[in-house]
Image (tube, rainbow, N blue to C red; front, side, top):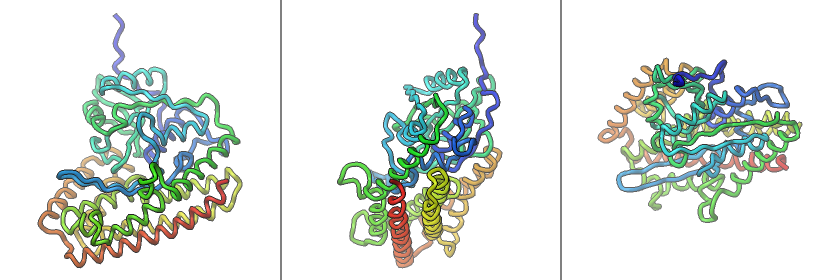
Amino acid sequence: MEEKILTMILPGYKHFGGRQVEAAALKNVLAYLGVTAPHTGQPFTDALLFGLGGGLGLGYFVYASAGYTALFVATRITTEETKQPGFLQATTERLGGKLTVQKSSNAPGVERKIKQALAEGRPPIVWVNPQGLPYPGTPYGYHPLVVFGIDEEGGEVHLADRSAKAVTISQAEFVSAQQGGDPPRFRTVLVAMPRPPKSAGLKAAVRQGLRDTCEQMQNGFGPKNFRSNFGLSALEKWANLLADPKDARGWPKFFPPGPRLYQALTATFDQIENRGGGGSALRGLYADFLDEAASILRKAALNNVAGQFRESERLWGRLSAALLPDSVPLLKEAKRLMVKRRTLFEKKGLAARDEIRAADARLAEIRARMDYEFPLSAGEAADLLANLRERVLSIHAAEAEAIRALKKLAR
């Protein structure tokens, strides 16, 4: 009888961390496969991969149903994410690579595909529900990660995620993290790069990524009646809703002072600051892409646009700080704890699990207090929303100017 292999760990795997979860997963896989960028001879940066997929974006949505409300602020370009992982697929194919998508109907099916990939020496990318992870996942977003080993005898799965260190969780925890999260549920992808990326192909990919950013920021995404939820129009829409007391979806009515306003403020902060290292709605990451694009395309003017997006990064940082003002102790503490749990995981991985749990417990206590002790009066809440509106409009003005400059250089 053939002996069952209980442990499969890719030899020499040492590629971890990243500033945006999807770009980081692709970066780490390409590095393990030995793929290098033609302009540097070094592994691809996650900033470059982020920009090749279309880079930054903006979307604004509020969902409501019986007993449930959710606010979403998209910070990367919006792509079709149905059966295919649109963002990663575009990035990979623009480099001349191939993304093989594998769907399973359950967690055991995913495990079989992971083992097969590991046996072939290929690190698979697997999508999970970020809310089901035993560590801080991507807030309100897709969360792919790299599996580089399974140890059935020890009941462990070895992962490469946003942490600078390897992450090892139990098989039970890994199965739990695969529950929910449509449409990527039980989805695995394998990356192949049949030929090394060439300089000419990289230049074309960079130009297409630049054009995609400009197109969506200026013209939105999806059906015509839905496009105002994306891009620069979404910033205007959001700004107007922040202080409109008449609109049913305006924040004064939809998020009145109390637990609903607290939920909106913390959810917005989380999505701006904790979707990637550096925060500020991924604007600094995109500025780094533009600096790299300037070198690839030999267009120094792109460095100037990168400077414009660094100004936008500063404005996003000021907006997120204003969402939970330092002048209100409970809100200041919540802000500090949300950033702390992310940075602890990024730096220490699961070695910081106890500290992360303590932060989560304190955040739960603060959230519970909002039901009976919201720290702002109606007047103070109105002033806060008016201030946020002006900050969003400032971001709109800065990014409209930056996108106009970028479009001239994206041809």
